[in-house]
Amino acid sequence: MKLFSTTALGLATAMAAGVFAPAQAETELTMYYPIAVGGALTEVVDGIVADFEAENPDINVTAIYSGNYDDTRVRALSALASGEAAQLAVMFSIDAYDLIEQELIVPFEEVATTDADKEWLTGFYPALMANGQIEGQTWGIPFQRSTIVAYYNKDLFREAGLDPETPPKTWDEMVEMGKALTKGDTYGLMIPSTGYPYWMFQALAIQNGKELMSGDGLTTYFDDPAVVETLEFWQSLSREHGIMPTGTVEWGTLRQAFLEGQTAMMWHSTGNLTAVKDAASFDFGVAELPANVRPGSPTGGGNFYLFKDTTEEERAAALKLMQFMTAPEQAAEWSIATGYMGVSPAAYETEALKAYTAEFPPALVARNQLESAVAEFSTFETARVRDGLNNAIQSALTGSKTPPDALAEAQAAAERLLAPYQ
Image 1 (tube, helix red, strand yellow):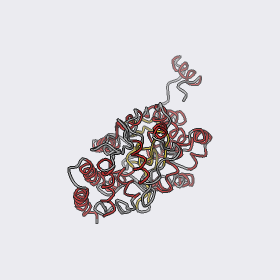
Image 2 (tube, rainbow, N blue to C red):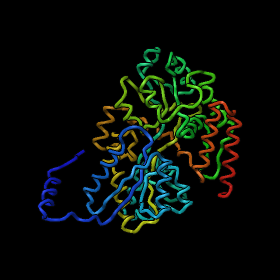
Image 3 (cartoon, rainbow, N blue to C red):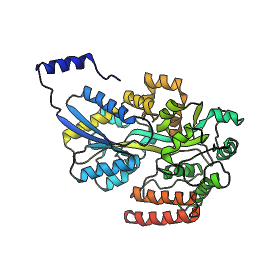
Image 4 (tube, rainbow, N blue to C red):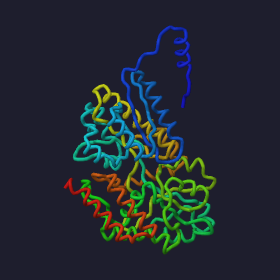
């Protein structure tokens, strides 16, 4: 990425000589964004924004890193409530229902009105649009998007007498291989149960043949027998099979645990892929998640949202910024730098991403998994409904409640929260 150029040098010299003063940006944009995985991703975002400003000198963008997804939602909405200017944000793809209910965002059909705009709206992977398309309108645009993938240590596979090119494709194979890989201070598998436990649980439930919620955000199925069975299976990985630590597994430190050989396999966001690639001192692989009744992973990550309290000029500038940041070239750059997916098929047709994936095929795993992916868990009152499910998962994994009791409580709480929307 260019840090300085002869053009910039000439501009600076002219300014110093008093030849002309810098032009004032006509439109100011403030954008909040999160980071929930490892790596210096703020530098990548700042670089893309700087490239946009260079092409659009009449637009000035203040990109504010604001913590994880939950932190970003709180900070962005607090800024809006206090009257601070903010035109757009990258927030959880699953925040759409709440943002619509609070009348904070506008559908993109209101601003993306030209033929080129409409073509842009239809250019993303459908699976990544699922969380942002509600009641026939588009409320969120994919940016830092992911599926859950299985990372595995090929060296440890070899030591255990397993084929390093054949990761588990079913739950039974995962348990069997996990037992062969569990040795000394190394566990066969770790699935994080802090941070975003509902996300991992949704993957397991899908694989067991049951979705956690209805498509309209009004109903949850936490106490369904297949969902209860799913939590019992997750619990059994430590209690019965001994291939995973008892209690909870930390989201934030799991990548490092994998890199240090504390676990031979881990489930985590593809957004960690480049950080693992850069830091791993061993041969590793990446695989789609194993199946039970069926394969599958929820999508995940962040979408662009456009806030309602914006001028026509700000909306036009924000749309231009979002189109730039999701364009094939920038999407390819973002994917290579982070491990997040290129959000459109066109991104994978760029020379940069074609060359990268040819050299490093694991970068295609999350994208390929979109064929069996479903929309990430999202309902009205998403944050509170999700908290109830997270608490149920953790109470079962720590042994303070049985899976049936924990999930029955979460279901009852969800029904109370969703009743006003029925």
